[in-house]
Length: 117
Image (cartoon, rainbow, N blue to C red; front, side):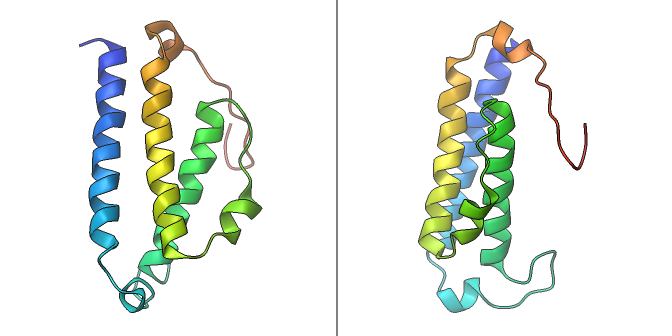
């Protein structure tokens, strides 16, 4: 299997999974999504919010656009906004990967971060 096929199928599968879990979570009440739970983040919605922020952070590196805006992602609070943002980010990654060549996929991307190099 080529790198292009492997990466494309992986992001397509990820997108399918994201849509499945967001569709399922969309059936849950605000009370359920905001109920305190023992985890890294105190609620399901806050966990999803973190997932979206992390996706956006990595997207800024993958797309090499350095457009990650922590303040913008922090401002989003409603479940519909977070759900739509996660789905949109996942689809954006699929669309991007499908345009890449084998050579593009093999390219090294330099990442400068306060957390790692």
